[in-house]
Image 1 (cartoon, one colour):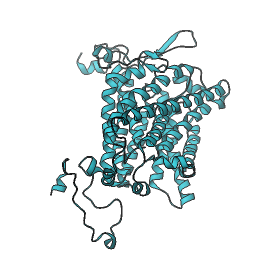
Image 2 (spheres, rainbow, N blue to C red):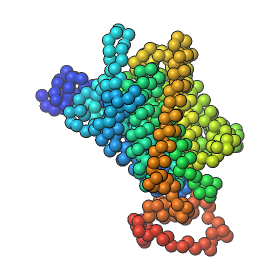
Image 3 (cartoon, rainbow, N blue to C red):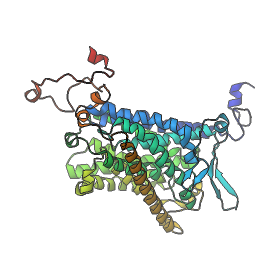
Image 4 (cartoon, rainbow, N blue to C red):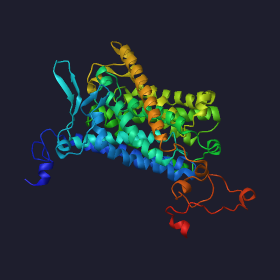
Length: 483
């Protein structure tokens, strides 16, 4: 029998196709991993590069690019097993490399997920594919969390401080949330629901982003007052990659190509579309015109809100969640933010607190209300239901609240300590002379050989303007500039 026949014969056994391997699950999980990777690379790289002022396009894209690469190396060297390995503490796993051949080609397993089922036997999470697939899938989640966090500090954080922050935050913050809720930690065994990262990813990145924005300090006054996107169409391209990639984000959460994966993909897109339409409608009602940036923000809040319950709620509930995620974060961003003096002082560049922390928290609480019992039985290890379905649902809602408070407290504390330690060695904020210039000062490169910052050319205002040559000439220069 040739290799092709072996690969597609279900009953055939070979070293490359062990008896426990489900080819469909493995193919879907690798596809889902790639989709989530596309959300960051190039999705958020493009989105960040285009949604900021022109002078910060390169710096913003590079922060995302660096985080993606740095997280991968830290993940396989130490952090995967801190999040999904053997228990060190009730909220933390034992760090160790995930690079050994024997470890990676064996069947995937989350050892601390072992739990008792209704028959009295014990089971653990053991997908039907190799550990290498699970390691990479979970890496893409860790990477996008840090890239989302970066949105709060764009346009002023010292790139060297960011380079130090990424591995430290991954080790001391992300792994704690991931192990506690997914890796068999105390919140997992307590029965808290976080289907695909409403708390582990969105609440964590939003709270840590706001905390980081406080410690790093604000942008220049001129940038805070006027920060136009340099390319709205490119911003939409990045947002589109983010939206489509979410099918892998939530569809891969069951660790299998099963019924629940299909429900999660449908609910994800239904909630995102509903949220976008509600946010846009509110913009039209209150401001008289639809905002493209507002539509993207509404899309993001819908995606973040459905994430903790994507495969656990009925599709009508996904519409309800979309309506709430398109309105409550809108109110927090457009009304409450402007009335709260403390939020006004903290310069959260892209409003990550509102689009991810508020939406992720909202989704986690709504999951505690709307999780449908039969859908919960498809993937969750415990008898679980939302409060609207009676039984132990009221207790489940309280568990969701307690878990959110733990995630918020840990992220505020860990992010603060990490940044204060980094500040002892590296300034967190760029000096004002670099902030005035932007990419050319920080990287010696510019995104476009074009004039202006999203302004229309006015010959009266700009006709006689003479631009002084940049003193920052040691970095790499584009061919267009040389010509």
